[in-house]
Amino acid sequence: MRFCLGRVPANPEFDPQRDAWQRVREPGFLTFYAMGLSTAAVVCVALSIAIASVGDRSAKIVIKPVDVTPLRILVGLAVVVGTVLLALAIHEAVHLIAHPGNGWSKESVLGIWPSRGVAYAHYDGQISRNRFILMAALPFIVLSLGPVAVFWASGRVNLWLAFLALFTGSARRSIWS
Image 1 (cartoon, rainbow, N blue to C red):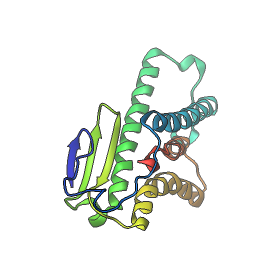
Image 2 (image 1 turned 90 degrees about the horizontal axis):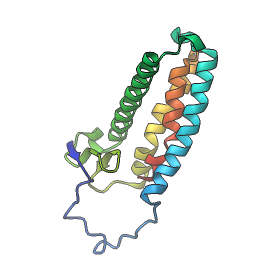
Image 3 (image 1 turned 180 degrees about the vertical axis):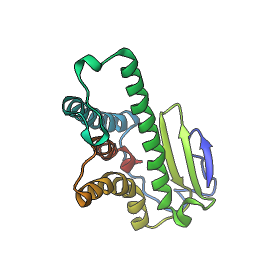
Image 4 (image 1 turned 45 degrees about the vertical axis):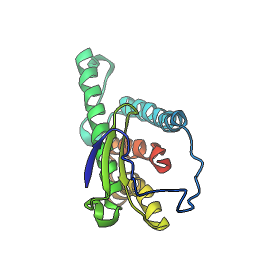
Protein backbone atom coordinates (compact mmCIF):
# COMPACT_ATOMS: atom_id res chain seq x y z
CA MET A 1 0.00 0.00 0.00
CA ARG A 2 1.18 3.49 -0.82
CA PHE A 3 0.18 6.81 0.68
CA CYS A 4 -0.26 9.84 -1.52
CA LEU A 5 -0.83 13.52 -0.84
CA GLY A 6 -2.53 15.16 -3.81
CA ARG A 7 -4.21 13.83 -6.92
CA VAL A 8 -4.45 10.13 -7.72
CA PRO A 9 -1.07 9.13 -9.17
CA ALA A 10 -1.01 8.54 -12.92
CA ASN A 11 -0.06 5.11 -14.21
CA PRO A 12 2.29 5.44 -17.23
CA GLU A 13 1.48 1.86 -18.30
CA PHE A 14 -2.25 2.58 -18.62
CA ASP A 15 -3.27 3.73 -22.08
CA PRO A 16 -7.04 3.78 -22.55
CA GLN A 17 -6.74 4.49 -26.29
CA ARG A 18 -4.54 1.46 -26.92
CA ASP A 19 -6.68 -0.90 -24.86
CA ALA A 20 -9.98 0.30 -26.42
CA TRP A 21 -11.50 1.49 -23.15
CA GLN A 22 -14.72 3.45 -23.32
CA ARG A 23 -14.97 6.59 -21.21
CA VAL A 24 -17.86 6.58 -18.76
CA ARG A 25 -19.73 9.84 -18.34
CA GLU A 26 -19.39 11.01 -14.77
CA PRO A 27 -20.70 14.00 -12.84
CA GLY A 28 -18.44 17.02 -12.46
CA PHE A 29 -16.64 18.11 -9.30
CA LEU A 30 -19.39 20.48 -8.12
CA THR A 31 -22.11 17.92 -8.80
CA PHE A 32 -20.27 15.43 -6.55
CA TYR A 33 -20.33 17.89 -3.68
CA ALA A 34 -23.90 19.00 -4.33
CA MET A 35 -25.13 15.39 -4.21
CA GLY A 36 -23.22 14.44 -1.09
CA LEU A 37 -23.45 17.63 0.91
CA SER A 38 -27.12 18.32 0.30
CA THR A 39 -28.19 14.89 1.47
CA ALA A 40 -25.73 14.83 4.35
CA ALA A 41 -26.81 18.30 5.51
CA VAL A 42 -30.47 17.30 5.67
CA VAL A 43 -29.64 14.14 7.60
CA CYS A 44 -27.29 15.96 10.00
CA VAL A 45 -29.77 18.72 10.76
CA ALA A 46 -32.68 16.33 11.22
CA LEU A 47 -30.75 14.00 13.51
CA SER A 48 -29.20 16.87 15.47
CA ILE A 49 -32.67 18.30 16.14
CA ALA A 50 -33.95 14.87 17.13
CA ILE A 51 -31.03 14.19 19.47
CA ALA A 52 -31.18 17.69 20.98
CA SER A 53 -34.91 17.53 21.55
CA VAL A 54 -35.13 14.09 23.17
CA GLY A 55 -31.57 13.54 24.33
CA ASP A 56 -29.72 10.30 23.89
CA ARG A 57 -30.47 8.32 27.01
CA SER A 58 -28.30 5.42 25.82
CA ALA A 59 -25.21 7.66 26.02
CA LYS A 60 -26.49 9.61 29.07
CA ILE A 61 -26.87 12.75 26.95
CA VAL A 62 -29.73 15.06 27.84
CA ILE A 63 -29.62 18.60 26.49
CA LYS A 64 -31.65 21.41 28.05
CA PRO A 65 -31.70 25.00 26.73
CA VAL A 66 -30.00 26.27 29.92
CA ASP A 67 -27.11 23.83 29.39
CA VAL A 68 -26.09 25.41 26.09
CA THR A 69 -22.96 27.52 26.53
CA PRO A 70 -20.36 28.66 23.99
CA LEU A 71 -17.82 26.24 25.47
CA ARG A 72 -20.20 23.29 25.19
CA ILE A 73 -21.03 24.26 21.62
CA LEU A 74 -17.31 24.36 20.73
CA VAL A 75 -16.65 21.04 22.46
CA GLY A 76 -19.65 19.49 20.74
CA LEU A 77 -18.51 20.83 17.38
CA ALA A 78 -15.00 19.46 17.96
CA VAL A 79 -16.45 16.06 18.84
CA VAL A 80 -18.62 16.04 15.70
CA VAL A 81 -15.72 17.11 13.44
CA GLY A 82 -13.39 14.53 15.02
CA THR A 83 -16.00 11.81 14.67
CA VAL A 84 -16.60 12.66 11.01
CA LEU A 85 -12.84 12.58 10.31
CA LEU A 86 -12.59 9.21 12.06
CA ALA A 87 -15.55 7.92 10.05
CA LEU A 88 -13.86 9.16 6.87
CA ALA A 89 -10.65 7.29 7.69
CA ILE A 90 -12.60 4.12 8.48
CA HIS A 91 -14.63 4.55 5.28
CA GLU A 92 -11.49 4.66 3.11
CA ALA A 93 -9.97 1.72 5.02
CA VAL A 94 -13.09 -0.32 4.26
CA HIS A 95 -12.62 0.46 0.55
CA LEU A 96 -9.07 -0.91 0.87
CA ILE A 97 -10.34 -4.20 2.30
CA ALA A 98 -12.03 -4.94 -1.04
CA HIS A 99 -8.80 -4.36 -3.00
CA PRO A 100 -6.85 -7.42 -4.16
CA GLY A 101 -4.57 -8.38 -1.28
CA ASN A 102 -6.94 -6.64 1.15
CA GLY A 103 -5.30 -3.30 0.42
CA TRP A 104 -1.75 -4.40 1.21
CA SER A 105 -0.60 -4.79 -2.42
CA LYS A 106 1.70 -2.22 -4.03
CA GLU A 107 -1.15 -1.21 -6.37
CA SER A 108 -3.32 0.02 -3.48
CA VAL A 109 -3.11 3.76 -2.90
CA LEU A 110 -4.58 5.62 0.06
CA GLY A 111 -4.51 9.36 -0.37
CA ILE A 112 -5.71 12.79 0.59
CA TRP A 113 -6.21 15.51 -2.00
CA PRO A 114 -6.43 18.69 0.11
CA SER A 115 -7.17 21.13 -2.71
CA ARG A 116 -10.26 19.09 -3.63
CA GLY A 117 -11.16 18.29 -0.04
CA VAL A 118 -11.28 14.53 -0.60
CA ALA A 119 -9.69 11.37 0.68
CA TYR A 120 -9.50 8.34 -1.56
CA ALA A 121 -8.64 4.67 -1.79
CA HIS A 122 -7.46 3.78 -5.29
CA TYR A 123 -6.38 0.50 -6.88
CA ASP A 124 -3.87 1.07 -9.67
CA GLY A 125 -4.51 -2.10 -11.65
CA GLN A 126 -7.18 -4.12 -13.35
CA ILE A 127 -10.00 -5.51 -11.27
CA SER A 128 -13.15 -7.39 -12.16
CA ARG A 129 -16.52 -5.69 -12.42
CA ASN A 130 -17.82 -7.61 -9.40
CA ARG A 131 -14.84 -6.59 -7.27
CA PHE A 132 -15.33 -2.96 -8.33
CA ILE A 133 -18.99 -3.09 -7.28
CA LEU A 134 -17.98 -4.66 -3.96
CA MET A 135 -15.27 -2.02 -3.50
CA ALA A 136 -17.78 0.78 -4.10
CA ALA A 137 -20.55 -0.71 -1.94
CA LEU A 138 -18.57 -2.12 0.99
CA PRO A 139 -18.42 1.11 3.06
CA PHE A 140 -22.20 1.48 2.77
CA ILE A 141 -22.71 -2.17 3.77
CA VAL A 142 -20.28 -2.07 6.70
CA LEU A 143 -20.78 1.46 8.01
CA SER A 144 -24.49 2.02 7.33
CA LEU A 145 -26.20 -1.35 7.26
CA GLY A 146 -23.85 -2.90 9.84
CA PRO A 147 -24.90 -0.64 12.73
CA VAL A 148 -28.56 -1.05 11.78
CA ALA A 149 -28.13 -4.84 11.97
CA VAL A 150 -26.42 -4.51 15.36
CA PHE A 151 -29.23 -2.26 16.65
CA TRP A 152 -31.85 -4.69 15.38
CA ALA A 153 -30.12 -7.70 16.90
CA SER A 154 -29.50 -6.02 20.27
CA GLY A 155 -32.87 -4.30 20.54
CA ARG A 156 -31.17 -1.03 21.59
CA VAL A 157 -30.46 2.09 19.56
CA ASN A 158 -27.67 4.57 20.24
CA LEU A 159 -28.70 7.80 18.53
CA TRP A 160 -25.12 8.97 17.92
CA LEU A 161 -24.23 5.71 16.18
CA ALA A 162 -27.45 5.94 14.19
CA PHE A 163 -26.44 9.48 13.25
CA LEU A 164 -23.06 8.26 11.97
CA ALA A 165 -24.65 5.36 10.10
CA LEU A 166 -27.09 7.67 8.35
CA PHE A 167 -24.39 10.26 7.69
CA THR A 168 -22.17 7.62 6.08
CA GLY A 169 -25.10 6.30 4.09
CA SER A 170 -25.98 9.77 2.88
CA ALA A 171 -22.46 10.41 1.60
CA ARG A 172 -23.20 8.63 -1.66
CA ARG A 173 -20.39 10.48 -3.36
CA SER A 174 -17.90 7.62 -3.07
CA ILE A 175 -20.03 5.37 -5.28
CA TRP A 176 -19.26 7.76 -8.16
CA SER A 177 -15.52 8.01 -7.48
